[in-house]
Image (cartoon, rainbow, N blue to C red):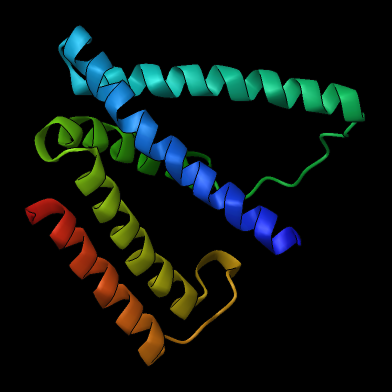
Length: 149
């Protein structure tokens, strides 16, 4: 049962990404600069996440006694997210939301397969099987069909 819930939450998360791209593109048009739109998007997200984090810590009485991870981890996710949001903001009005989402999913799958293969940052290692390659090829073909036709 929880597998279904997690899968549906993954689909919902993907829908949020699809909705976020045109919102940020409209913001970029209003501001005249895609990077500024990405910055405001990140700033608003950081504020909301900060409020949620403080609320959860207070409600659950969580102790913040943690061991600091590698220094690069503090900025790597934000940098990658910044590139994603900025590029999505630029690409959405040029190729459309559906094509962008198709290419994003294809890119995520290809990167995910490589991450699984090498066990990047402790991810469980999974071989790149013929079925996974076939799925990636079909997804790439689908992305191209969405973009070109």
